[in-house]
Image 1 (cartoon, rainbow, N blue to C red):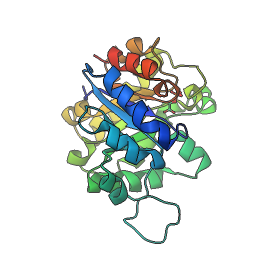
Image 2: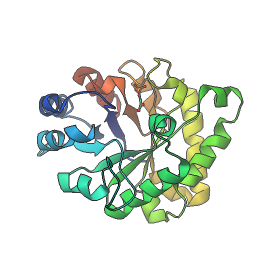
Image 3: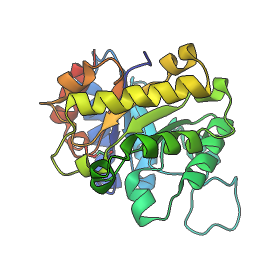
Amino acid sequence: MGKYIIAGNWKMNKLPSETYDFVKSVAEATKDASCEVVCCTPFVCLPEAVRAAKGTHVKIGAENLHFEDKGAFTGEVSADMLLDLGVQYVIIGHSERREYFAETDCTVNKKTKKALEKGLIPIVCVGESLEQREQGVTMTLITNQIKAAFEGIDAAGAKKVVIAYEPIWAIGTGKTATAEQAEEVCAAIRKVLAELYCDKCAGEITIQYGGSMNAGNAAELLSKGNIDGGLIGGASLKTADFAAIVAAAK
Ligand code: PGA
């Protein structure tokens, strides 16, 4: 299946002044990693994160970008700005951005296309709310989110995208999806990708699980055939916890 990637999503945590030492500690604690290790940090932490990751295996990502190249978009950050810093990954369409910052399937698609055009690796987030799960519309919703995110993207581009399946009800709640629930949706996502592109192409795309993944549950989730890594929020803020998840990704 896809390349294993464990990515931390710091969200709005940690200060620029804490970043260098923390990323260095992650690099040290994960130096034997057999997967890709990524720290996605707030914009203002990125310069220090990139400086700390230099010469190590750790890659740095942003948590958002704007889909236009430049111009009158007060408060926004472009792909070129991220690339200029040495950033390689970018999270797109996290459920918190969809909920609090009016991100839609349409902006997710535009941002994904811009990231690919510029050579950033997009981590595209999809996931259902508890209400949607209880209504039995999870698969329909996820299928629609995936189709919309990949609209207008060819197979060569699609293979570079990382997908993070994050059930909203499991994010930051301590309520992890069971490995079976996560695998069921990740397998469905791969099926949609196979229909959009081809089996081989779908097999090469990394599909992560995210939502209260931690040192205790990572191994079981990552043992599933269609789960190729994790997008880690809370547990990415402590080196030992994050390193334990990385160690579980074999
Ligand atoms: P969590 O967050 O690990 O704290 O649940 C995951 C995410 O939102 O990416």
